Image (tube, rainbow, N blue to C red):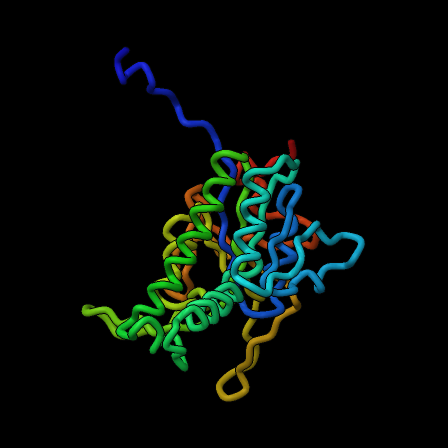
Length: 253
């Protein structure tokens, strides 16, 4: 049989999303609006959601092996969850750093000294993030689950040879750990307050009415992207997912 007989039009698949933003911005609350979610918790961000509308969640993770056990259960055991939320990959970073340090028989004082130094410790942490992304990719492909990675934001300085240096928001992770949640995601959204400028000169200040917006297109100010042609700021209303109108697979089943 010719390999050409296997050609077909790819079907819509569940989405893989990374939501980044400052603490208290509502990242976990937004993630909880995805279809029928289950939360893997490296931190307790669910406390911000009213108890009567909180999604189901595994027990809080305290050790690295608990993460793999929870992911394996979703892969191998029957369930009807449609979205897995990892809250947060920033908290996982701390967990992974502690694991790498504690696993080193030489008992290093920091991740920079772990595994002989020269970046080996940070590379080991990045490899664990790659393992998380691979496991979630299996859930996406085999179990038909949406995947949402929650990340805290940090700033970084970008230096390019043909223009002045500038500052932008990125995921609060080691430089080598960012790629699995950006390069391999369908949407990377930056969640922030909508702000307005008032006054002139020294009296100029930014104010906000509390409205949240999600940036999913590429900008110099923050790391963000999407594969769905979204080119506008998305207003985030309570209890609603602004991505649903753009991503067919998010529509209720």
